[in-house]
Length: 89
Image 1 (cartoon, one colour):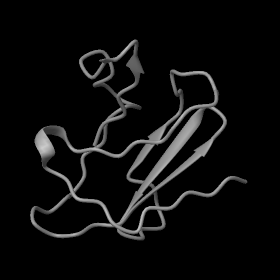
Image 2: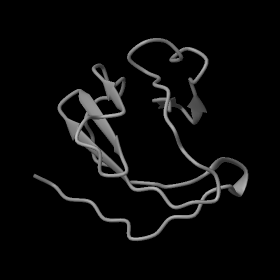
Image 3: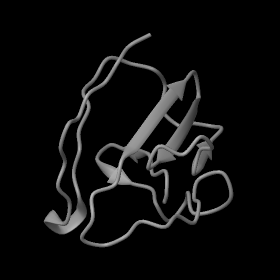
Image 4: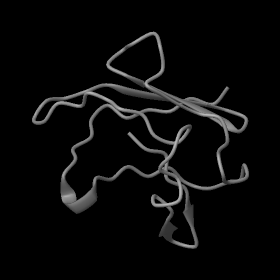
């Protein structure tokens, strides 16, 4: 699993591939998984399959807080999404 900020339409995955931006995760093929992302200030916590402990913690989100949109996609059309929701607190 990897956090990859996008600047001017370009993904920076090569630059953000070290500790604090990636984590090994067991994501099975051809099976639904549950993902929860909690963003608090400049940090993000990613939870898989209702685990109590985050699979990935990003301590330094690279983009400033701003109005925008939320998007979901899989590279090369390899993902399906269901039951998406978000909450503001």
